[in-house]
Image (tube, rainbow, N blue to C red):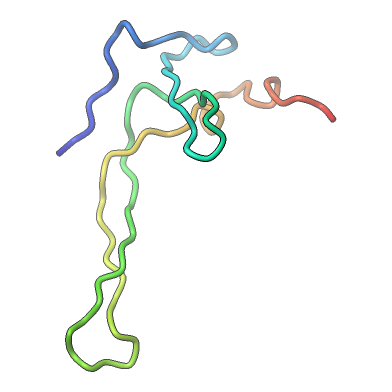
Length: 85
């Protein structure tokens, strides 16, 4: 099932490049992460075990799927958001 972009009401504009973004919560730190509003193609790698007796017991299978990318990867001004230590 293809991903759909978030509702227009959930979209914001990037302060630097004005691209459409939305915020998702990070799984580990539960902090907001800016995400690009339009999904791109990406790969999902999964391990499929074999029932047959083989040397490695299975194989990796690669599926092409729609994924949302963090805006920090695509924003031309991403470095300006980084905090200095």
